[in-house]
Length: 282
Image (tube, rainbow, N blue to C red; front, top):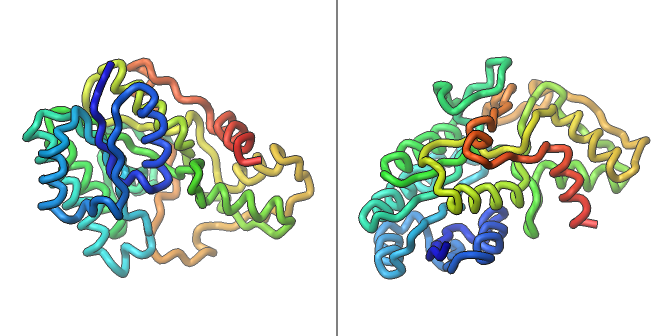
């Protein structure tokens, strides 16, 4: 299948991997923030009208969760209003819009994995801005909204996983949450899942695109230590309350990817993803 794919935010952690993955079977035009500022509505509309892509993939995002509490205007501009511009531009040329959201749209107060039909309840500026982006993206007749969380991997990675790994390999004390549960997402797997959704012409809509299973950050840290053969790593369990975080985080943030599997896109476990990532980082 030949598609002209326009990727925005291609200079970021997810965007760079996405461009490499989709370039294997599609014609890709990748734009970093320096190439195209997604908050410049006029420039975005002109670029999309000129390129006229079959698919628009929005990897651009304001991801500073704590920073959004001090600068909600920028968070809303990038994560919300820019998506409205993209959605309208996509609809005007009958293009498919792929947009990425987050587990932060949930409040994290339940004990069972969240599914796509669960009602969002965002807490904090970042979470609100991401939910707004979902709503705007959903206005496009042809859309995929993929919720990811705790992203790791990619050539520009400096994720929470990388920070834990750096501390473990350096022999430093590593502090990790024992009471925040997540479903990590490996960028390589997210990019491949996106490609398969497009290739399979899966039904449009909202999907949770995370690796299978869930873990606390302290358990993940111990898995990292086992993989790199550091049995004596100094991993200290801490609670979210001890960290005095600026912005609220969902405490239980496990996402079910069963809907994604139902359309033929089965995500590997987070443990398998960690091992594959560490193989390419050594």
